[in-house]
Image 1 (tube, one colour):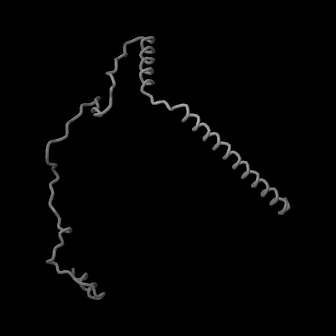
Image 2 (tube, rainbow, N blue to C red):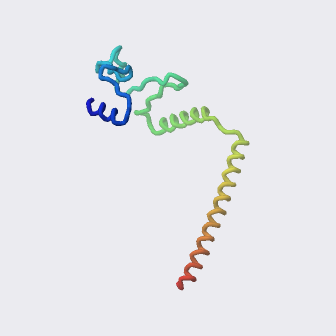
Image 3 (cartoon, helix red, strand yellow):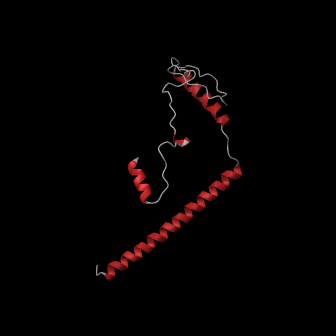
Length: 131
C-alpha cells in the first residue's frame, strides 16, 4: 500500500487510508455447500416431461413385431405427424417460389457479367504483356 500512496501523491491524486472500506469491495464469506433441498434425481433412460404441449401417446413397443407390423406402425405414426404439420397456404408458396426464381435469375446474370469482365481483362492483359 505504501507504493500506491507514493504514486498517488506523485500524480496529485487523493489517497484513501487503509481503514476506509468500500461496501462493494467487502468480501462476503460463502459456503461451498448449497443450501436447500438437493435436485431431484432422474433415473437413466427417462427424461423429464417438457411441461407443455405434448399430446403424445405412449409409444407402442414393436421390438418383437414382424416386418409388416413395423411398417404399419411407421405409416400410422407418419400419418399422425403429418396431421400436426402447419402447411403454408397457396399464396405463400407462390410468393416464395417467385422470390426464389427472381433471386436465382439475378445471381445467374450477375455471375455471368462478372465472369465476362474477368475474361475480358485477362485476355487483354495477356495481349499487353505479349502472351
